[in-house]
Amino acid sequence: MPLDEGGFTKLPNGLLEALYSHRIPGQEMRVVLYVVRKTIGFSKDSDAISYGQIAGALDIPRTRAIAHVQNLVSKKILTSTNNGTRKPATIRINMDFSGWTPSPKKGTSPNNGTSASPNNGNSASPNNGTHKRKKETYKENYYCRAPSVPDCAAPNGIPTKDIVDHLNSVAGTRFKHTTAKTIALIKARFKEGFVLEDFEAVINGRWKKWRNDPKMVEYMRPETLFGTKFEGYLMAAKQTETKRERRRLN
Image (cartoon, rainbow, N blue to C red; front, side, top):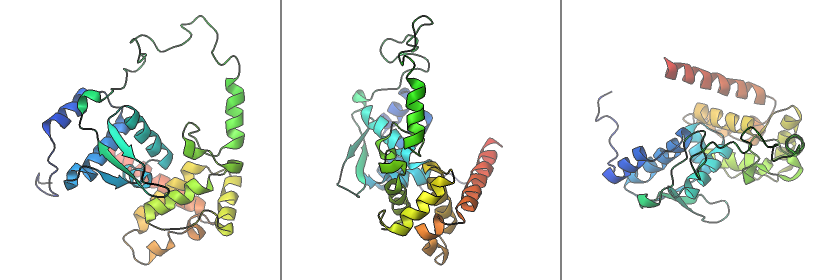
C-alpha cells in the first residue's frame, strides 16, 4: 500500500521519543496508540472515548480495556475525566512526559529492581493458605475473569449491566439492563457455563459482521444476540480471531 494512502497522523517528536523510551506493555501500548489516533489524529487535545470503543477497536474484552486505561492513568501516561453516568470519559495523552511512570522490567520489583518474588524461596506464602479459598469464592460469586476490575462485580454474580452497557457502547444502542427478558436470556446463558468475556466476544463479533449491513445491524439486540444462537455466534467470533491470528503469524 502506498505510504500516502489513508492519510497521516502528524505526531510531536517528543511524544514519539516518550513512547519508545518508556517501557509500556504491549496491550497498554495499543490503547495509547488508539487514543493518539482518536485525539491527535483528528487534531484534538482529547476525546470522549468509551471502554466499548476501545474494546471493539482492539478486539479485547471490555474489562481488559477498563483495566488497561486505569493502569495507564495511574502511570500518568493518560488522563481520564469522568463525564457522568453512562457517558464516555474524556481521555487524552499526558504531554508532560517527565511524569510518565514506566512499567518495571519483567521479573523485577518496581521498588528496587530485585526479584519480585515475596518468598525468596524461604518464607511461607503470604496468603497462609487462603488463596484457594479466595479463588473458590470468586468462582461462586463472579462470572467474569477479571475480579480486580470493579465492573466485573455484580449482584447475584451475573454482570447483566456490564453486558448491556458493552452492547450499548459498541452498537450505539440504548437497551436497559433491567428488562426482564434480557435478564432471563443472560441468566440462561450463564447457567450453560458462558462468562462475561463470551458475551463481549459475541457482541464484538456480530458488530463487525453486521455493522455495514442496514438490515442485519437491526439485530444488534439482546433478544437476538443472547438467545439460542449465542453459542454459534461465539464459535464464529473465535474462528474469526483464529484466522486473524494465523494471518498475522504468516
